Length: 200
Image (cartoon, rainbow, N blue to C red; front, side, top):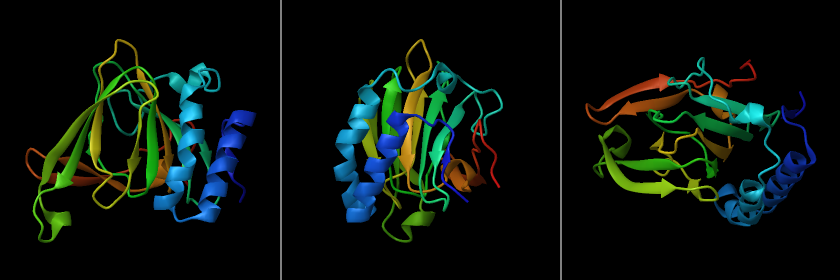
């Protein structure tokens, strides 16, 4: 199997190449620092992402019209690049990613709520507690680093859909992950799928 470039453009190829170079030189938690300039440049370039990748999707696996548009994924499932589109007034469930990653806002505005497991003992089974809130504008980006640094919820606060670009160290849309209801301690497995590519 070959790497899949759903959006095969010079900008995407150049970015993936920079990511591959950084990962070849250091483990992901260190390589993400080297990726920052290329990721910031991708977020600042208004012309590389087609309009089709900025649209909601009523059949999306996260519900609420939320789309996950695959841009690129590695043949071995160890890397994916995608656009998450959240309609105005909609929010993702509280969810994890089970992979390191960089996430940045490309268009619109979002509120992000970051959660941590509350309680030092057997933390992965402890209830979730709200750890921080962030308001995101285009160009803002942040790091995801499990096990505790990749649980959040985002909500669109702009009058237009928010579009965030995700670079993650797994085939995120095809990975079984967790959605949480912190209010009652609930957790369920879910798979968001891709809006434009099947999972094998």
